[in-house]
Image (cartoon, rainbow, N blue to C red; front, side):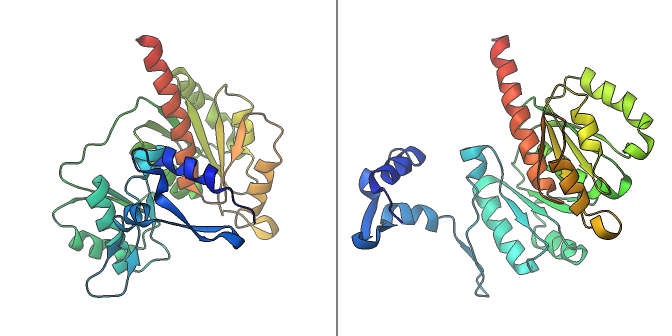
Length: 284
Protein backbone atom coordinates (compact mmCIF):
# COMPACT_ATOMS: atom_id res chain seq x y z
CA UNK A 1 0.00 0.00 0.00
CA UNK A 2 1.31 3.42 -0.93
CA UNK A 3 1.00 5.79 2.02
CA UNK A 4 1.40 9.51 1.61
CA UNK A 5 3.25 10.62 4.78
CA UNK A 6 2.90 14.35 4.12
CA UNK A 7 -0.89 14.12 4.02
CA UNK A 8 -0.90 11.91 7.13
CA UNK A 9 1.29 14.41 8.96
CA UNK A 10 -1.05 17.23 8.01
CA UNK A 11 -4.04 15.25 9.24
CA UNK A 12 -2.42 14.55 12.59
CA UNK A 13 -1.55 18.22 12.95
CA UNK A 14 -5.22 19.06 12.41
CA UNK A 15 -6.32 16.46 14.93
CA UNK A 16 -3.72 17.45 17.52
CA UNK A 17 -3.06 21.17 17.04
CA UNK A 18 -0.15 22.76 18.82
CA UNK A 19 2.20 19.80 18.55
CA UNK A 20 5.23 19.83 16.23
CA UNK A 21 4.88 18.36 12.76
CA UNK A 22 7.81 15.98 13.26
CA UNK A 23 5.76 13.72 15.50
CA UNK A 24 6.00 10.95 12.90
CA UNK A 25 9.12 9.20 11.75
CA UNK A 26 9.70 6.69 8.99
CA UNK A 27 10.19 3.14 10.19
CA UNK A 28 10.58 1.44 6.84
CA UNK A 29 10.47 3.61 3.72
CA UNK A 30 10.49 0.71 1.32
CA UNK A 31 7.21 -0.62 2.70
CA UNK A 32 5.78 2.84 3.29
CA UNK A 33 5.39 2.20 7.02
CA UNK A 34 5.74 4.87 9.63
CA UNK A 35 5.08 5.03 13.35
CA UNK A 36 4.09 7.59 15.90
CA UNK A 37 6.92 9.43 17.59
CA UNK A 38 7.23 9.62 21.33
CA UNK A 39 5.09 12.77 21.60
CA UNK A 40 2.01 11.33 19.94
CA UNK A 41 2.63 7.91 21.47
CA UNK A 42 2.58 9.56 24.90
CA UNK A 43 -0.85 11.00 24.10
CA UNK A 44 -2.19 7.48 23.67
CA UNK A 45 -0.29 6.14 26.64
CA UNK A 46 -1.87 8.79 28.86
CA UNK A 47 -5.27 7.25 28.17
CA UNK A 48 -4.09 3.78 29.23
CA UNK A 49 -5.48 2.20 32.39
CA UNK A 50 -4.09 -0.92 34.02
CA UNK A 51 -5.40 -3.06 36.87
CA UNK A 52 -2.91 -3.36 39.70
CA UNK A 53 -3.74 -6.96 40.51
CA UNK A 54 -4.04 -8.42 37.00
CA UNK A 55 -2.75 -8.22 33.46
CA UNK A 56 -5.80 -6.35 32.20
CA UNK A 57 -4.79 -3.48 29.98
CA UNK A 58 -7.27 -1.08 28.42
CA UNK A 59 -7.15 2.20 26.53
CA UNK A 60 -10.36 4.14 27.23
CA UNK A 61 -11.00 7.25 25.16
CA UNK A 62 -12.40 9.91 27.54
CA UNK A 63 -11.78 12.67 25.00
CA UNK A 64 -14.01 11.16 22.34
CA UNK A 65 -17.07 13.25 23.18
CA UNK A 66 -15.11 16.49 23.13
CA UNK A 67 -13.42 15.46 19.90
CA UNK A 68 -16.43 14.22 17.90
CA UNK A 69 -19.55 14.77 19.97
CA UNK A 70 -20.17 11.13 20.89
CA UNK A 71 -19.18 9.48 24.18
CA UNK A 72 -17.25 6.25 24.42
CA UNK A 73 -19.49 3.39 25.55
CA UNK A 74 -18.19 0.27 27.29
CA UNK A 75 -19.79 -2.85 25.79
CA UNK A 76 -20.31 -4.90 28.94
CA UNK A 77 -21.80 -8.11 27.54
CA UNK A 78 -18.51 -9.65 26.45
CA UNK A 79 -16.26 -8.31 29.23
CA UNK A 80 -15.66 -9.61 32.73
CA UNK A 81 -16.35 -7.34 35.67
CA UNK A 82 -12.68 -6.55 36.29
CA UNK A 83 -12.26 -5.25 32.74
CA UNK A 84 -15.40 -3.13 33.00
CA UNK A 85 -14.22 -1.61 36.28
CA UNK A 86 -10.80 -0.74 34.88
CA UNK A 87 -12.28 0.88 31.78
CA UNK A 88 -14.87 2.77 33.81
CA UNK A 89 -12.15 4.11 36.10
CA UNK A 90 -10.29 5.48 33.08
CA UNK A 91 -13.39 7.18 31.67
CA UNK A 92 -14.39 8.62 35.05
CA UNK A 93 -10.95 10.08 35.54
CA UNK A 94 -10.90 11.63 32.08
CA UNK A 95 -14.49 12.74 31.48
CA UNK A 96 -16.39 12.31 34.74
CA UNK A 97 -18.81 9.71 33.37
CA UNK A 98 -18.79 6.07 32.25
CA UNK A 99 -21.57 4.52 30.15
CA UNK A 100 -21.73 0.73 30.17
CA UNK A 101 -24.11 -1.00 27.76
CA UNK A 102 -25.42 -4.58 27.80
CA UNK A 103 -24.54 -5.06 31.44
CA UNK A 104 -25.08 -8.62 32.67
CA UNK A 105 -27.29 -8.76 35.80
CA UNK A 106 -24.55 -10.37 37.88
CA UNK A 107 -22.20 -7.46 37.15
CA UNK A 108 -24.43 -4.76 38.64
CA UNK A 109 -23.73 -5.41 42.33
CA UNK A 110 -19.92 -5.50 41.87
CA UNK A 111 -20.09 -2.24 39.95
CA UNK A 112 -22.13 -0.60 42.69
CA UNK A 113 -19.62 -1.88 45.24
CA UNK A 114 -16.60 -0.68 43.27
CA UNK A 115 -18.02 2.82 42.72
CA UNK A 116 -19.67 3.57 46.06
CA UNK A 117 -18.44 7.16 46.12
CA UNK A 118 -19.92 7.82 42.67
CA UNK A 119 -23.48 8.06 41.44
CA UNK A 120 -24.37 4.72 39.86
CA UNK A 121 -27.52 4.84 37.72
CA UNK A 122 -28.89 1.42 36.79
CA UNK A 123 -31.06 1.67 33.67
CA UNK A 124 -32.83 -1.69 33.72
CA UNK A 125 -34.96 -1.15 30.61
CA UNK A 126 -31.85 -0.31 28.58
CA UNK A 127 -29.73 -3.02 30.23
CA UNK A 128 -27.18 -0.32 30.99
CA UNK A 129 -25.35 1.35 33.85
CA UNK A 130 -24.13 4.94 33.88
CA UNK A 131 -21.62 6.04 36.51
CA UNK A 132 -21.12 9.73 37.28
CA UNK A 133 -18.41 11.49 39.20
CA UNK A 134 -19.96 13.61 42.00
CA UNK A 135 -19.11 16.86 40.21
CA UNK A 136 -20.35 15.72 36.78
CA UNK A 137 -23.03 17.88 35.15
CA UNK A 138 -24.80 16.47 32.09
CA UNK A 139 -24.97 19.05 29.32
CA UNK A 140 -28.22 20.11 27.68
CA UNK A 141 -27.99 20.81 23.97
CA UNK A 142 -31.61 21.58 23.10
CA UNK A 143 -31.73 18.67 20.64
CA UNK A 144 -35.08 16.85 20.47
CA UNK A 145 -35.15 13.12 19.74
CA UNK A 146 -38.09 10.75 19.46
CA UNK A 147 -37.70 7.03 20.10
CA UNK A 148 -40.46 4.69 18.93
CA UNK A 149 -40.74 0.94 19.42
CA UNK A 150 -43.03 -1.28 17.39
CA UNK A 151 -43.65 -3.75 20.23
CA UNK A 152 -42.86 -4.17 23.90
CA UNK A 153 -40.22 -6.79 23.00
CA UNK A 154 -38.33 -4.04 21.17
CA UNK A 155 -38.17 -1.78 24.22
CA UNK A 156 -34.71 -2.84 25.55
CA UNK A 157 -32.97 -1.82 22.32
CA UNK A 158 -35.13 1.31 21.96
CA UNK A 159 -34.34 2.28 25.56
CA UNK A 160 -30.63 1.86 24.84
CA UNK A 161 -30.96 4.36 21.99
CA UNK A 162 -32.88 6.74 24.23
CA UNK A 163 -30.22 6.52 26.94
CA UNK A 164 -27.41 7.41 24.55
CA UNK A 165 -29.32 10.36 23.11
CA UNK A 166 -30.02 11.62 26.63
CA UNK A 167 -26.36 11.30 27.60
CA UNK A 168 -25.48 13.33 24.51
CA UNK A 169 -27.61 16.18 25.84
CA UNK A 170 -30.90 15.64 24.03
CA UNK A 171 -34.43 15.73 25.34
CA UNK A 172 -35.91 12.35 24.45
CA UNK A 173 -39.57 11.38 24.08
CA UNK A 174 -40.34 7.65 23.96
CA UNK A 175 -43.38 6.04 22.36
CA UNK A 176 -43.72 2.29 22.85
CA UNK A 177 -45.92 -0.48 21.43
CA UNK A 178 -47.30 1.24 18.33
CA UNK A 179 -46.41 -1.32 15.66
CA UNK A 180 -48.12 -2.00 12.34
CA UNK A 181 -50.32 -4.76 13.80
CA UNK A 182 -52.36 -1.92 15.31
CA UNK A 183 -51.25 1.10 13.34
CA UNK A 184 -54.04 3.31 14.70
CA UNK A 185 -52.08 3.42 17.98
CA UNK A 186 -49.32 5.41 16.28
CA UNK A 187 -51.33 8.36 14.96
CA UNK A 188 -51.88 10.45 18.09
CA UNK A 189 -48.45 9.96 19.71
CA UNK A 190 -46.69 10.71 16.41
CA UNK A 191 -48.76 13.86 15.93
CA UNK A 192 -47.76 15.02 19.42
CA UNK A 193 -44.10 14.25 18.71
CA UNK A 194 -44.11 16.32 15.53
CA UNK A 195 -45.97 19.20 17.16
CA UNK A 196 -43.17 19.41 19.73
CA UNK A 197 -40.63 20.00 16.96
CA UNK A 198 -38.68 16.75 17.11
CA UNK A 199 -35.38 16.82 15.17
CA UNK A 200 -34.82 13.10 14.52
CA UNK A 201 -36.65 9.86 15.25
CA UNK A 202 -35.37 6.38 16.05
CA UNK A 203 -37.80 3.58 15.20
CA UNK A 204 -37.05 0.13 16.64
CA UNK A 205 -38.84 -2.86 15.17
CA UNK A 206 -38.44 -6.61 14.90
CA UNK A 207 -40.68 -9.14 13.13
CA UNK A 208 -41.19 -7.70 9.62
CA UNK A 209 -39.52 -4.37 10.51
CA UNK A 210 -42.20 -2.36 8.69
CA UNK A 211 -42.74 0.47 11.16
CA UNK A 212 -39.65 2.58 10.27
CA UNK A 213 -40.77 2.75 6.63
CA UNK A 214 -44.26 3.81 7.72
CA UNK A 215 -42.89 6.57 9.94
CA UNK A 216 -40.34 7.71 7.36
CA UNK A 217 -43.14 8.04 4.82
CA UNK A 218 -45.05 10.41 7.12
CA UNK A 219 -42.58 12.70 8.89
CA UNK A 220 -40.40 15.58 7.61
CA UNK A 221 -37.37 14.69 9.78
CA UNK A 222 -34.61 12.05 9.50
CA UNK A 223 -35.61 8.57 10.69
CA UNK A 224 -33.11 5.98 11.93
CA UNK A 225 -34.34 2.42 11.52
CA UNK A 226 -33.28 0.11 14.33
CA UNK A 227 -33.92 -3.57 13.55
CA UNK A 228 -34.22 -5.83 16.59
CA UNK A 229 -33.61 -9.53 16.96
CA UNK A 230 -37.29 -10.27 17.59
CA UNK A 231 -39.15 -12.58 15.23
CA UNK A 232 -40.12 -16.07 14.19
CA UNK A 233 -38.62 -18.67 11.90
CA UNK A 234 -36.64 -17.96 8.75
CA UNK A 235 -36.48 -14.20 9.18
CA UNK A 236 -35.89 -14.30 12.92
CA UNK A 237 -33.04 -12.78 14.90
CA UNK A 238 -33.53 -9.47 13.09
CA UNK A 239 -32.66 -10.59 9.58
CA UNK A 240 -36.12 -9.93 8.11
CA UNK A 241 -36.37 -6.57 9.90
CA UNK A 242 -32.95 -5.47 8.70
CA UNK A 243 -33.61 -6.43 5.08
CA UNK A 244 -37.05 -4.83 5.13
CA UNK A 245 -35.62 -1.54 6.37
CA UNK A 246 -32.76 -1.62 3.86
CA UNK A 247 -35.25 -2.33 1.07
CA UNK A 248 -37.52 0.57 2.03
CA UNK A 249 -38.98 2.86 -0.61
CA UNK A 250 -39.57 5.62 1.96
CA UNK A 251 -36.98 8.39 1.55
CA UNK A 252 -35.24 9.74 4.62
CA UNK A 253 -34.73 6.40 6.36
CA UNK A 254 -31.22 5.34 7.41
CA UNK A 255 -30.61 1.97 9.04
CA UNK A 256 -28.18 0.71 11.70
CA UNK A 257 -27.26 -2.87 12.45
CA UNK A 258 -29.44 -5.34 14.32
CA UNK A 259 -29.92 -4.40 18.00
CA UNK A 260 -27.50 -1.46 17.66
CA UNK A 261 -29.28 0.91 20.00
CA UNK A 262 -26.04 2.74 20.74
CA UNK A 263 -25.50 3.49 17.05
CA UNK A 264 -29.09 4.59 16.50
CA UNK A 265 -29.14 6.85 19.54
CA UNK A 266 -25.79 8.36 18.61
CA UNK A 267 -26.86 9.13 15.05
CA UNK A 268 -30.16 10.69 16.13
CA UNK A 269 -28.41 12.80 18.76
CA UNK A 270 -25.75 14.03 16.35
CA UNK A 271 -28.49 15.19 13.97
CA UNK A 272 -30.58 16.75 16.73
CA UNK A 273 -27.64 18.54 18.31
CA UNK A 274 -26.67 20.08 14.98
CA UNK A 275 -30.24 21.24 14.41
CA UNK A 276 -30.37 22.68 17.93
CA UNK A 277 -27.12 24.53 17.26
CA UNK A 278 -28.61 26.04 14.12
CA UNK A 279 -31.74 27.09 16.02
CA UNK A 280 -29.61 28.82 18.61
CA UNK A 281 -27.68 30.73 15.96
CA UNK A 282 -30.91 31.88 14.33
CA UNK A 283 -32.07 33.34 17.64
CA UNK A 284 -28.87 35.29 18.17
